[in-house]
Length: 320
Image (cartoon, rainbow, N blue to C red; front, side, top):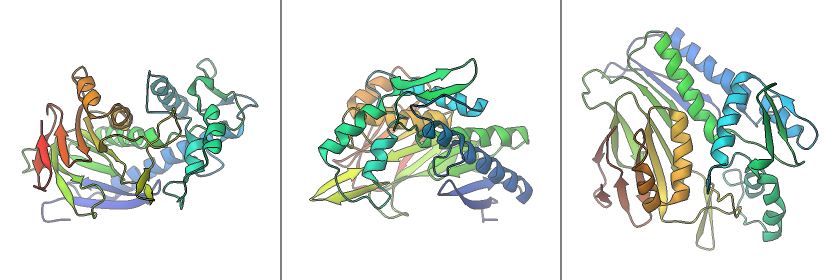
């Protein structure tokens, strides 16, 4: 237990450190939460051959694969978002991601011919979903779907729902960057404090702290996985049209929302839009707030309806 009465439980799952904060000493509940996360990870992962998603990928161009309700539902969401006009979200981008290997010892820019050959395999229109039998068919051999950009948010929401069912009123779950909260900590009227990292800074270097109550906070930044070559930063947020990392003024996008799955979706969509178009888009999204961090050292907040931001680093310009 920490000095503020928080009981913290941790584990390493989904390749990330997982942190659960409660206000009761309940290791049994913490163990149940981690078991739930592990169970969900086994459904959606592409990092082992036996998952349902891998079964779909292995049958690409051959035959449809029937999957569970949960997997079909999440694939349906990822499919719909991937088909939005000019969407930077594409759950069929797997072949491009594998070729670049960014974050997995990849330190070279692939040949243009390699990218051109792989792009036809990243067309979400070639994913055929059949709700009648919950089957998924990738029409072209070599296609791969990857739910990694959306699964953490879905799982964080499942954990939040489970804690609600157990009567928990105040808690925080951090799934390696996807933070989902319940209620408000005792004696913290402004809510949970969630750090906004300084891009390319150390783990303890923060631009500021967001305060939220019962909200999800998800950040996607180019500093999370990248390599530098000839003075250029090649990062893991790809433009589905070109197969190359998106190149705009943004270093990171943070989304504040009710559902963590929406945080996963909108961080990618807003990054693809860029700061100005992203702010304009948010004006018509009453349930979503966002914080943009730009290359010219600005922190730009949308109209803050669901969060309060406390700046720490004065070297960055704060705008609303």
